[in-house]
Image 1 (cartoon, rainbow, N blue to C red):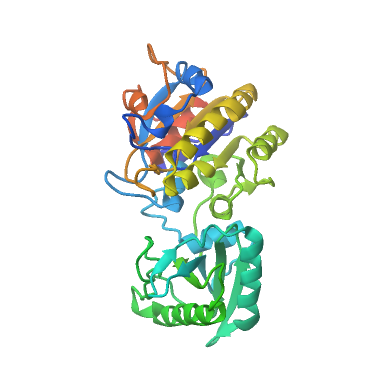
Image 2: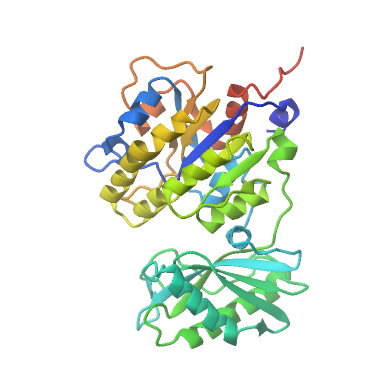
Length: 400
């Protein structure tokens, strides 16, 4: 993508990148969630758009949300590796320094045998998460020489920041990723992370002791322990003035990391769309994120995911098409098929609309198989940003 960086120019043309998190699926009764949904507005838009599919990271690789979004923004997710903890910390507004080791944490429930019964503690309300974080913070202010900061996120998610000189990153997670398994010990992947592993494991032990007997959650799981990397911004790379509208902290954190202004919004789709409309004249690139489709896929609820896609089509798509963006892209960061109850390696559908597209003949629906036959072919997600800039006439010609 260094070539695209050198070709980018300023312009008053506006781009809207809409991400339906986890949109991609695999069939149940011959149709994916998107193919089973009644989406007349998306179908009409698809008939006058360019269609294709995106490989989030590489063929066969199941992506996390962080690297998958980085790819959509035009970054090589293998070169720029960002720990989930950093994204969560930035997303809830913490000021992260060079000595901070950040962890994304889940409240969880262990059974009597010490196995994880529920990795998400039943998606406890955010209010309960805040109460439990306050209990932990009251009793855990330091571990060895490290200051410990504990802050609530949404539902079962929270953030832990360990602050001390000499804390290295390069650590494994304690989350086994599946219910019915025992939590894992955090291990250093390099010698300089030895102290970090020791501090993180001690935090888990002390938290479990404090939460013993608590019905809402009796354990904590840590993931994505990392320090803040240095990443060039979208302004520096593509001469954009970018903004993000997202309700969940991780996506807000990632947006901040690449230089987006994060716009205030409530946790409703209407308020997210309203934020884009309100600031339409203030920015030339918007990232609009919807999380709920991913959650339904992770819960294995095929029908709920279908209903959410239909809601997006009915309530959101008409508003987006009426705003007058020069380029409108609707896609996903990764697939979260309900039949797998988690992220998968499958490609995701992508729709790009502008006045310069080559619409396909006889397109009747927006779905995975239709997009696989689309004129864009199958691209790496990292290539999408160059395509959007081109449709916005924000790339100069290469060579004489």
